[in-house]
Length: 152
View (tube, rainbow, N blue to C red):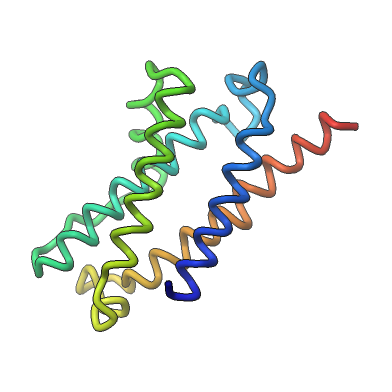
């Protein structure tokens, strides 16, 4: 397993551990800007689904659609999940994250730094680095901050 994939797997494990420690009665509280914990998890799931599809198309040599406006993409993904309960969102998150790991791990080395969209600077390797950052820095830090606050 590639070093960055290992870093992603470890960051994801730590994130999942924090999710599992998050109090059930706080999961639907708006704590992350305008999002609940369920929304944050749905957001990760949406990106995993998008990235898996994109990587599959790249492997086939077919063009992939670009996500467009990030904020709009995030809002649409979260909105689609509003009717789903925590268990459904969590299961989907677990499944799509594993799919992302498998798909990225199966990308031939020569495609890892290939541009996905000719007019953009994104490659599979860059998508993985962005995912690592989101897990390690952005979301995990916020979740840990709340967990620490509630422990004291």
